Image (cartoon, rainbow, N blue to C red; front, side):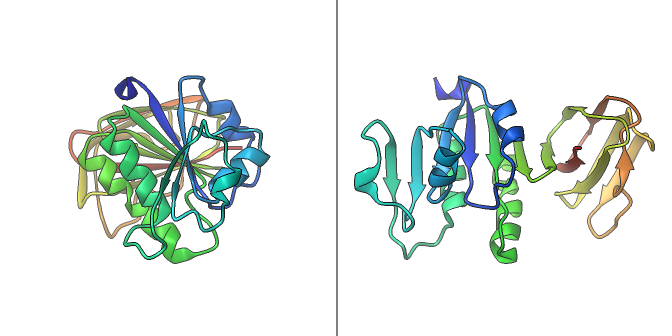
Length: 211
């Protein structure tokens, strides 16, 4: 059953305006809250199906009995975000959306960004939503929707990404190769409301700043 569903991880990062998240949620989504992300979700009128982490910011006895609780000790190797992602990957969700993975700590934010590699290795599409930014993991092909002029940047997550084709952008790409340690893919723009990106080999991150 879960293999046909999308997991939505509700992070404990900076939430800000939740309109984007609410507009993306589907009735079939399985909502996983990372510890304090549970409280933020409830304040936004969102009811998670489960909560995971060391639960240092929650009182378990106050949680509904219908909510699945997976508690870990405070002294653990993984962050709550990694535990949520591992749960989603191990339970065969076909797609993952992670809202608010970044907060005030640079170390945890960067660690969460590189957790995308876990999804990439298992060929599971993953999208991060933070503020006005969407970050997509491209394994083969992606279609973007937005407004003309919105910013788009491409960044290789693997050592190189080859055969990049990009249409619908101010600077289109035809069989482009991007390598780590260069900034060639930064600061492109949508030239129309829809864009398409395909790759032949590698893992590509697409950063989309929507208005």
